[in-house]
Image (cartoon, rainbow, N blue to C red; front, side, top):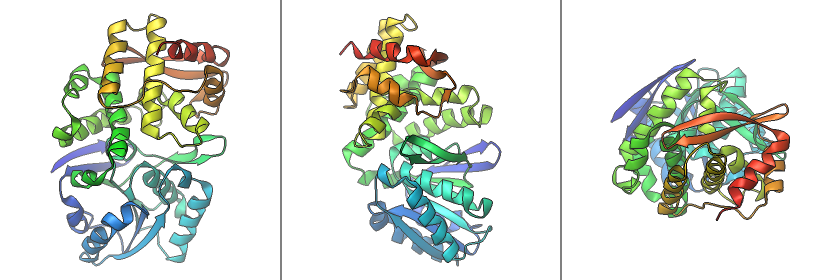
Length: 350
């Protein structure tokens, strides 16, 4: 088992291994008297009973709340339902919320743990590649509003992350590919060598892939926990990606939207002479290698308008992440009135 330590506002460990779900009770020995498992209707039937069984051996009372799967559940209604569930089950500040699921479950459970009684224990057990490499690490929790994605939330670091790689074996191919987009992102923003290693199928060296992504994010979060500077690099492809998600009414998955967003902003960077054509071609080829989209049917005006709801907007400017080369990206503030033209540059070439 690989252990990676994050030393942010709260110090915690990320444990990566295979088969560790059944050891959760022993690993999470300081849960308090009650653990509330938050999961969804796909993950719950697969893994919740095993987790409950493991926790019961540590004499922890276990309660469970199940949400419908999918981005549509990451809303205020579900958030309030979970808060009321925790209150009705009489959890105290010394008890723990456990997120068992992907990014939606993690964000929703984390936000609930942060707000209930002004903060109780929180553990992430990611069950998707996307959650394992990205959303379970770093402390971002949020729900979506009708105006846009992740517009209500707080930074709330977990007490521990348990990443059981064996749980990813039940993922549908399209869900696994969602995570591949985030993995590719890490290579583009931080490591050309890691990016090149992705030419070999990820599932042949999955533990190493997850660990490297977590290390990259750990280092960035420790430098800039509250996203005032360098942490914004983690948003490569996300501003446009979130706009695509919103425009599709979340029918386009996060990973597919981010993949398209990365491709669009990289084509724009090439046309703006920020990166050269080899950088663009390398990214497009890698995205296609994992059967991820490199374009969208939405037009530049619609995307630009949707981008204005993004939480990274600062007054009349939006901070965009452009690649200079594979392994290095830069932050550029784009005026709102110029955003559509930048997006158009990325959409014109198919």
